[in-house]
Length: 301
Image (cartoon, rainbow, N blue to C red):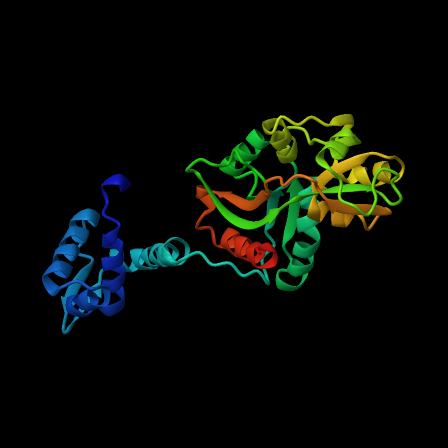
């Protein structure tokens, strides 16, 4: 028998007949009129080459062939109902799923500790895998399913295949060591800022928003050191007279590990929009929907 030529709705009709032993009652159970149910029964008889159900008194009794088929048909119908037609559900309290998040090292610092604390209570068996990817690789990972979410500033994820949700705006501040001889209580002028010796954090494959802003304004600073990782900054700043311009949340974290002085930049640079991104293939996934909602509650301003 070629399954491509079989109307699988007939199995629902068969299952109803096997349970109710009446054309009328079976039709009512699955929403078919008596003529439609009779037509379905005739098609089933032709399909299996057997009467299947025969009139015996007031009931339609199954033939031996129908008795043999009944448990298998019931299993198929129940499987379709439970595993295919039912809406997907997600129970964070019992799930052991592993979520993969894409975020740069600054994102690891900002997002992971609060999220981990939240998951320890709400979803104690969940696991996180946090990776850093260049911008183009981030889109490929989300599209392929290798990653579930991207958290941070990803301007390239702007095509129709990606969804985004705004979490907050981050703005830049200046960071120097405590007691820096070139920084006092008065705000720095733009010229004084540009003349200082700077350290630039430039992760591989990622945009540097503040640097782009300076270039657009025709401003050039004296960058004497360029590094790839934000968390290298505290010991470098503390042991030198260099100045760094970094997002405020990172500056606050760095100040926990070094004696630093944080102050506003002398120019009003645009903020950094921080979003969570996901591919449309995961838009309706119940587990990912739950995780996105949790992140939104934790971090959105």
